Length: 206
Image 1 (cartoon, helix red, strand yellow):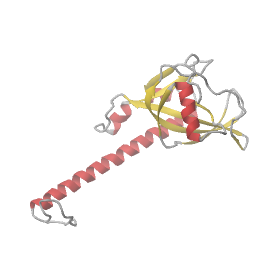
Image 2: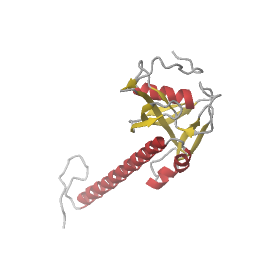
Image 3: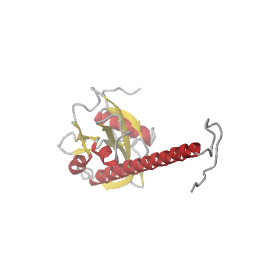
Image 4: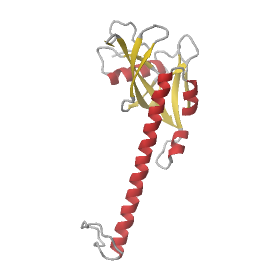
């Protein structure tokens, strides 16, 4: 079992594909209001916060990411890097996509895969605590401050996904309300039994 207070180091186990280093990362997020069921789309995004971290030797801010190694799955690497760099753990959600970029510091090309992470716990002690700062901020602020353009794109994809999911929930709620109203009307005029034990087709009543 890996120590909580140490990070993996070295490049001997790094994955490469067609000469590109493979990296993975997360957009850690949380809601200021724990119960989001009653929030509208705009309110949902307004109550969303994402976690950025600083680089060890500079003041740049970005989302946690790092090398995907040959002895772990992509998901395991994403969780490990986020825990090492940002000191948070939680629920890893479906991949947002793949981005290719050239590292300014290394001069090499990378393929990056990003995931949303719904944060369940923020650790007091983590491997890179003394090397990085972590800062929670709203989506708009994070997009302005994040130093990597491809990470801003990943954040945009994440927000679009949340909005799409919210629209689907709203449509499902409207459908449920409409069906409940129809069932009530059918019972009122005697189309279906009052006890609700039998199913009935939908009828157009004029």
